[in-house]
Length: 341
Image (cartoon, rainbow, N blue to C red; front, side):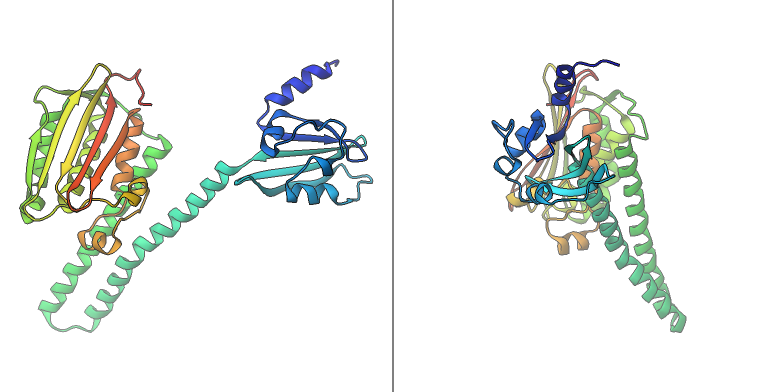
């Protein structure tokens, strides 16, 4: 097989891995474009690596005199940190040349941390209801008063329901993230869907005397997966009621342009601090943890909303003022060809 050197070097410059080649005396023979940009390397050809490499960790590796006799692999799969990113490094000595190759594994590290945080958060969310259930069961074992027993059973049922809702939300998140369920879009009447959810939410709205206002256009059609969009709407409306003030309002409105349909949910509630706005769609994030736990919920609602919007090639935005309220706006393409940028 005869492959021209220029073709190989051109190929290496397209790679998303950093590649550095040194001769036996550790002078630079080749650095691909990815490594040049990452390490800010210029005019490197023929120079000793000590004049070129500024990263302390790579410098120490290249400075060390490893035993290379009968050994081609010097370092295998070593994790290193460069410019706020994680890389997997391999270091070889082949045919009297040193080869340093490093691959960006930051997305995998972020994923690993997200998994760890997720497990930690789920464990934390389940710990309280399980502790309450344990206490209830232990109390019932020694309790003779029937009324007290019924009271404790009611408490236990409430905690079981909390865990059930959490599990349901976790399953929804898992299916959305894995794209396990297809998005089946059809034209739905938004006004009718809002009216149906308002009917379901009537009792919790009446508890705070919150007025539900449907100002969506009666003939407006949204091109969405009906089941999933209903989940999105329900979460937004339920949050707007729960975090509202006494005698407040929740208003839904809609509009459209040539490419997109817009749905807005406005409330007159407590508002969201500016510093929390970028975080509210993260799983388990709560602006006011003590207040959120008193109100109820799993901390997954807005994350579910974001996933559903994005699964429709859409976006969700929020504007909020403390003590004045919030407006959540969902932007959905009218047809599947469009995607929100």
